[in-house]
Image (tube, rainbow, N blue to C red):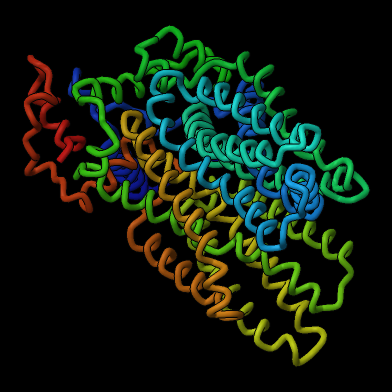
Length: 547
């Protein structure tokens, strides 16, 4: 039976469809050469290709996995390493170290990685500009191999200095590798899959944390005469990345916009997207390249003073600092004492700590499946908001834990809840969002700024937390509660949703906050505009003009 729609309903449907099409077109970027809107509203061919899988897995393996591994690998053999420090000192100077000196040397060993990360962040922008994201990741493996070599050989060489130097190289690796992998995954993935692909980065970070905890068991490498192999294992993912990552192409966005290699970009797009017709994607990149061709290179100082991206920069700094100051490192510190108060054996505590990491890994996997459905903004709100609720409950149970033997188990449940909330949002979604807020020219220095402030606050928190803990005791988590609440409010008020949007569209969503209006464009400085530039390009440039 054939159904016929009334004429009036049919006309209304056509008008609504036409209006919807017009609204979609209004959001499309304008090609300054043709003065025409570019139709990039839909991505065709959202195929997960072998090239995309290889680049994602092995890119993350040599950066995020290794970073996660380097964080927890020092926990299990800490007692044996400190004993090695004391024996080395005794062999050299004929007298043992006192407890305070051993603690000081171990604190330097652990915390110097944060200093290395700060140094590793500083050259990211120029390296990515010259070598590309993939090239920078390959270069970064050198620091991983140096760190693994120095730490693994420290015991044989009877040199605790080699342990400290090795940790410093590990820090450089973490600081230098965090930004290029986020950029690479953001730029090579189809728009509809950008969140899910980027979340693989966070998942492998969690796998690295758990791998170090498992290998650190006394039954494996966490034993007195095998701890050097635990540190040497870090070289394996670096070698795998060096062998496999060169077979995949560089980011198409980098090839076309930064290197003006149209042919190379087309080949890379075909391999990453798995389709022959990539004209739509090339057209999008060409539009962005022509818009940015009239902009002078942006330094870090000028970027921080730029009105065109002011709120994006503020957002990147706030999110990176809040991620660090959300208190996860302090939370891991409290896990063992809470379980000790519950009367648990050391071996059981170690296995429960592994379970804590496994819960975070599961949350990261769930985030990977949901990020392109729920959006980035919602996951960040749930993450920081959930952590605030968890800290409130944890503070309550910590102050009541001596009243009943079962209360410490509720405290541990709160820690698991906070860890899940952290992995669901701030742990990995944050880096995806920060990368999406900027177009190609601004992205490397902007992420470098965010990474610098993130590692700086991480170092300062490591120095100040012992004093905070001594002064506030069980109420120390109220500080992190306030920080998480403030970040939740900031995300709700300031951060737009970036799901399914182009980088140009995301940048344009900040125009009102940056006080940039199409009706009253700011005149670009003469040295930013090339001779003979069309009036339309000049009108467009005010969106990206440096204040």
